[in-house]
Each structure stands twice: as structure tokens, then as C-alpha cells.
Length: 528
Image (tube, rainbow, N blue to C red):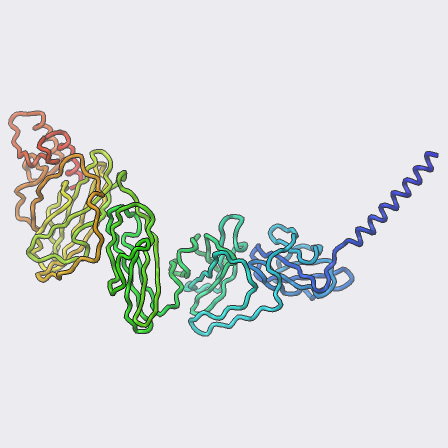
């Protein structure tokens, strides 16, 4: 009885297995005419082919199969023209997937993960209009493409002056978010050796390459057109007003109170007269006129957008912008030179006292004092006798017609220093307007020393014949060195027989001779 039951149970199980096999076989997927299969080519392939077949029933084409159509940034599609169960994706040049089982209509195969999934993006269009080829420097008419989600993406351009045979654009936001596998997407030549690519979304970073040669990691937004020979950005511009330069000087390491020269130049392609306007954070500081420069002095820290606008007499317009960062120097240790008057490249009158005044900052360490030295060179190469002083201005009399250079040195109490060179033209006839347009410089941006500065500054020509008074020359030997510091310490200690000029030794001008004066003399000696 038990044996009979076991036989019946075994027979039932066999029947169930057979039915399961038949059902499984009936559920196998095969492609039908009109189905669409997709592949995500995020592994660097630029040409995609789809080879489909069923064992013993033929294939869709001879190897490498049918060319696929691009429907998105890295997605390609193929409409099946028969009934097939298997598929191989390949690039037509020896690279291919393994033998894959067709996953069904509307499925997409990811070349980087090797997995199928449902595709929900742009579907295959019926036919794309071919692009009109460029015949001149103008942009060609682009092919009609399927609509995609572009976000804030915009075209990016490469000036192929390096002569690459192919130009690729690799863009990314993170290691898992890029426009394609390396080397990126092929760019399209649109004329005048300019190559173009439009991503389907916005990316922060970009690398241009030939597949072997490449640029550095670049930030998208630095400009529209990248030159792969000069490694510089510019704006891809077809306006009749061609902007040739726009800049800020200095463009970095800017502190409150720093004089920043904003300037620009432009050319007209239609022989029109160009006017310029400059704005800072939306406020016009230099209205539309022929003036193309402006000296701006920020009084507060922060980010500033500088906008240059252009207009000509034929109604053409253009614009450029840049961003500057202004920092606070109230805790800065290293000294900085913010401004000097007269401004660089100005005129000074022959045989008339010229005073160079310096606005400096930083130096916030030790005594918090800043020391100044001025080296004036006349057109014949003659120089004054420079020495460090607490005075932030220096006067001299230009006696020779021509170009004078003034080297300004500013040093902090920790021996850190900075220098800048300014050029002036000495002439008997000085233009009445020599200063560029400027905003008012704040009067309280430089940290003040803890002790008063000398109230007078000797007026000197470039080549003085004698030096009746030299600050710090306590021993009267005609120079300032460490011996003067030692001599002053002996005076302070009330050694007998010490001869000295009080004004010469009172470096900080506070009416008291002390160790601070001796320390300052050591500073002056170290800077000579």
C-alpha cells in the first residue's frame, strides 16, 4: 500500500515539473518587429551597433549588425526588424558585449554595469534632420535633435589651435556623475577651427582631449571658448562689438581700501564708435561714455560682480562680467600695499616737489608698526639714499625731464615685506587732468601704529648733496646700522660722555628714548 502511494506521488511530481517547463518555455522573451532596444554607451564607445539573432533562424544583419541611433547624451536605440532572441552590442571596431538574451521591448542595457532595466527617457524619433555644414565662421544650423532635459546646460566650445585630429569633451560633477566614460563625448567642428558640444545637463567640471593629449581639470563657467594651445578661456562671441580685454588690477589679494583699476577695450567690426559702462554689484560707477577705465576702492569685504557694458553708434551691444573677492586685513600679518598717490603712470612737474603717499595695511604682529622705504631713480639712473622710516609718504624734486621710477617697500615688525614699483613722467607741462576716475578711498582702513609717527618728513631731491639729518644715526657716522642700536642702549643706560641728537634717536617720535627706539633702529638697519 505504501509502495503504491509513493508511485502515484512520484508520477504527480513528474507531471508538475513537465508543466512548469512548458510554461517557462512559453514565457521566454523574443524580439518582434517594431520593438525598440536601447543601450547606454557610458564606456566611451562613440559608434554603436546592434547584432541580433535566433539560433537556426537567422539574424538582423551581417556583423557588426545594424547601426544604432543616438537619442540622448549617451543613449542609442535600434528598432527591431524581425523576431530575435539574442543580441550583442558592439562599436564596430572589435569591442563588444557577450552574448546577451533580449530583455524585451523598451529595455535598456547599461554597458558599464552590464544590467538591463526599463528605459523611460527620450524615445527614438522617426528621423533626424541632417545638419547643415558650416561654410564660414558663422555657426552652422544644427541638426534637429530629440528634446532632452537640459537643466541649465549650455553649449561649450574648444578652439582647436593645438591641431588635434579629434576633440573630446569629458564633463562631470562627481565620480558617479559624468557625461560619458573617458575620453568623453566627441565634439563637432562648426567652422573657424571651433568645435562644439552641448551636454544634456549642467556639469561643474570639464576636460578637453584628443584621446591622448588633454587639458587640465577645468571649471565650467570660466568662459565659453577654451583654446587648447594657449590653455585660456574666452567668450565665444559673434557680436559686431568684439571685446578684446576686460580686467581688474589687482584681480586677487584685494583688501578693503585697495585701489582696483577696472579697464576694458573693444573693437568695432562695423566701424562704429564704442561707448563703455562699468557697474559694481549693479550700481553704475562709470556711466556710458568713451571712458573705458575706472579706479574702484572697496570699503567693505565680500563678493563683488563687476559688469562691463558696451554700446556703439549702430545699435550693437555686448557685455562681460567678472567676480572679485575683497578680504579684511585687520588681522593680516604680512604687509600689503593698497594704494599710492599719485597713481601709477601719472605726470609730475619738473623742479617742483612731488610727494608719493602710500596706503598700506597688514603688519598686525609684534609692535603693529609698518616701516617704509622709497627708492627713487631718475631718467639718468641716479638714485636717492634709501632708508626705512615710519613715514607713509616721501617727497623729492624731479630735476631731469623724463621717466622716474619709485620703488616702495613696506615692512612689518616680523621682517615680512612687500614692494611695488611705480612710474611717473616728469615734465614742465603737466596735463591738468592726470588722475583716472576714482572712488573715494576710506580714511580708516589701515591699522594705526601704537605710537605716534614723526610729524615731519624732509623734502629731498633724487640726489641730495648732503644728509644733515638721518633718522636712526645715533652715533653720527652717516649710516644706520646695529652700532646705532647699541649706542642708543648706552644712552638709555645713562653712560657718561654720550653725545647724540635727541630727534635722530627718537624713532617713534613720542618724546622718550627707550628700548622700542633701539628695536626700531635694528629694524631699519636690517632693511638697508
